[in-house]
Image (cartoon, rainbow, N blue to C red; front, side, top):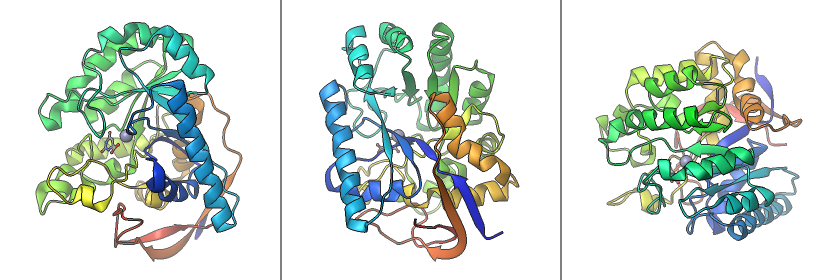
Length: 344
Ligand code: DOR
Ligand code: ZN
């Protein structure tokens, strides 16, 4: 078998950034996915109807330029999100939904890139969860307690997550970028309103890869990858065929100078290598038959979206991931990959 044809995937968690960076990053993304849940931690963050509308327009205009430069017809639908904050009211939520928002995202304060203004009191947001539930908006949560010891941050957030899911049984909630066996178990045990996204980098790395030998800043991300036993459980969840687990790459590009410095930024730029790596993982697990549901079905179903009708092809054609792409070091930089996206 040297070709794989897939229903075009959805990436249910991506950082596209803004300005020139956005255009370069988006070009990589549209080759591999047809839709993506676009994270709102821009600077300033997406918190209002105006900001959401302007950001969607910026993405769509970038897409037009990408297509006209390349003479292609990539289609891509950005699924817009807003950052949930205590200042919001039921009316703001209604307006954001009417403006086309798909989901709202919670960043605990200080947890990651541009989250200084994040949430401190999760209970204080109960009226907002209620409003989101009424509007059929999905709540996406970065599940970490920033003040906890770095590798315990996700585990310590789980009781809060469990309580929110219990108190809002009609609200769809996604625990984003799972990194621990405990988080996988919680999602498995939770009712149907709960799902979990999995990134490619957390299926492939452990904390040892980042700090166990030399420091590898381009693998540094939040939440931190954990132990190999956690990685094994994440992989098991990804290939399980359980619809509660689907792809959310958390591809998070940062310019090389913002990674290779004192106080380097967190984030792995996986967009250019997403599908080639996923095929490898599913093949290694002998579960290639479960790939398409993970990338292109379960996420759409959870978000109540029609399945993409477009397909994409990948061939076995060894290539080397560039050391640097538009000022960013991508995941697997300089390494050979077996599968390559066929550009349509
Ligand atoms: O590593 C990360 N980078 N984790 C996040 O949650 C945010 C992201 C970013 O925006 O850079
Ligand atoms: Zn993210």
